[in-house]
Length: 230
Image 1 (spheres, rainbow, N blue to C red):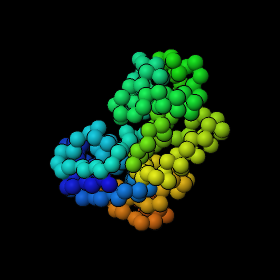
Image 2 (cartoon, helix red, strand yellow):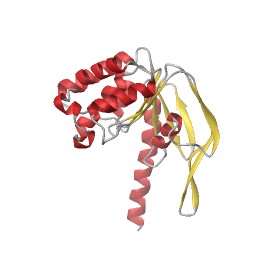
Image 3 (cartoon, rainbow, N blue to C red):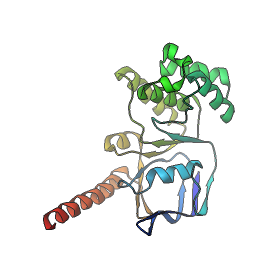
Image 4 (tube, rainbow, N blue to C red):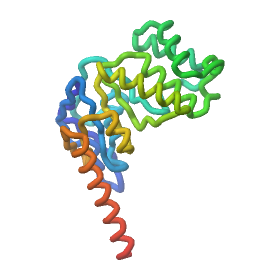
């Protein structure tokens, strides 16, 4: 379970505070498959990184029960000067999992071949994505945090990744940031819309997407009017 208690975070923009979170009190239950939605700049990724512990709030606290992944995306948590296998071994020690087991899983899953023993800085973005996703799937978490992950590799690899992830979600929860309605529908059952530091929850993912798209359409109408008047 993830609990946000009076969580507040803001950045200064043009001399005024821009709130990412403003006294948020939120409970995300175990097993939830939640899409975190919001317009560009709303602070979705920042909130996700606060939940992960990568960014500190200005006020309030976050309590987590159970194991929580790092924010999984194509950039990942890899050290570019280390080889792929060295990154995996390091991660295994950090999370206290069997090193040989994780290395074996990632080597087979990521399909990097001889590049697995080469420095990650020599990898293409797709290779990094496969390494990162392989590491995240090789460790069982109670809740996965997903930040704008996109498909990488050929159709066969994408199919394999989707199958493994859905297997993990039979026993785990998910908090996902994505701009893809299709991906959100396939992975999430509930949604939350972040807007001006406040968050609104929806028990049905379609209701969440509808509210989110209304906000986006409002932005487009406002911009069009400004262009016509300008």
